Length: 382
Image (cartoon, rainbow, N blue to C red; front, side, top):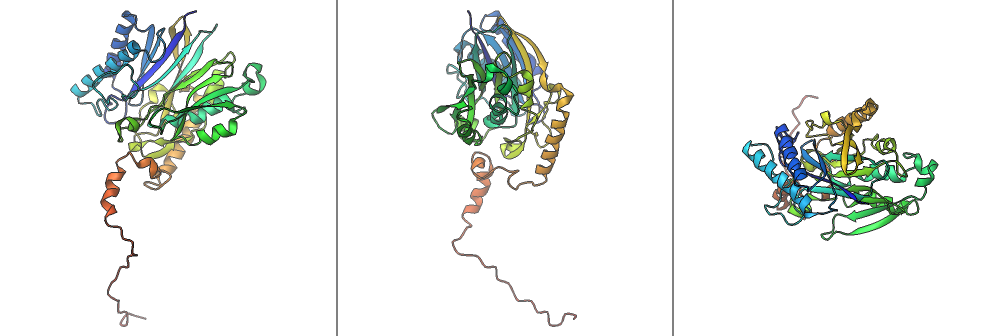
């Protein structure tokens, strides 16, 4: 049986009026480019969308993961879009494009990618989740809820097909050379949580059912690891399969009902709630945010995409969005103070070190005492 690969590749190549939204002409250019990819039989099908200021390319094909032809198609699409963005003087044109030369796949070149190769089941529903103004570890919390928390996913308790549990492949994204570990749930749940709670270092790369069925895949690319400086947040994407021995789509979406705190937001330097929104509201304006996530639901049929449905368009998520805005409003009132502003280590690749460097030479090992003239209050009124 022919296997189908789902590839999602994203990049910020320019946005309208600041870090807000991908302009329509870039989306249309990308659709034209991927249509040519279908005509050339590089990919089977595609869908183009955006998450805030990130252009998102969703593709299906039979060439396997990290395929040079498929990745080149995405790369060429980003390069065409960057050229057009620069021509139109669009803000941050080509921000995530860190090289002018393609080197086999997009890894290490700026764009983020998540891929999953499947043997299609009788019915193949899945969701693609795309975040903006945040970091690769932003999906740690909801993915743990989906695949390991019985209070979120009832199937872990009542469905025999889920009782065997899941294996989490976790990546240490601070290592210069990719480094991975497998953690099995439920038996290693506490060890897994010890890692996943450090979202700036340990991120979920893939999740498998214990029998080897692939269940989820996430992009884990960190831009500052590649560029050596801050040029934007890492804005992850995740592919999640659902149903038939996996969490139901309703259980997958339930994991996003708590707008948990993530790093990113304005200048990649602030903590904020991850707010699930429909595509229409994937427009980041308040303080360049707050961080948000969109979800599109598809079926795969013989390598073709059927859909999508806008998963967070449901009014049932209105209360989550309200909570997110209340959290955002509270955090904003604390301005430059932690925990709204990220901790010092996380600010290393932002623009803050340039400010702090000016203060270094003014520090002294001796305590400074400010001396002034004594005030004479003898003639003051009693």
